[in-house]
Amino acid sequence: LGNKDLPYLKNLIIGGEVLPSKIVNTYLERKYATARITNVYGLTECTVDSTFFHVSEPVKEDSVPIGFPLRGNTLFVVKDSTGLAADE
Image (tube, rainbow, N blue to C red; front, side):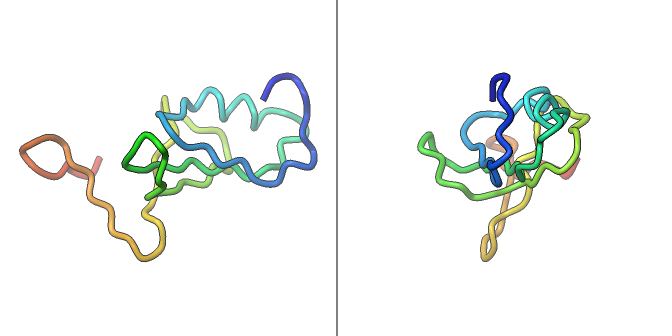
């Protein structure tokens, strides 16, 4: 977000590639970090969102989780051609 504070920003929805936690944590450290941050994830390059994760505190992992399925959807994470990934 650069070096400017955005006090009127209410929601920051980020989608596309993996969201590094360093970016989110840097924003959350700002004095006027009042926007609700949501990481969204989808199946295609045009970011058709399927999941969401609201970020409300600094993230300890390297990236922000893809989160939970949108209402009315079920989420299956496929590891590779052998089937579903195990819960971690």
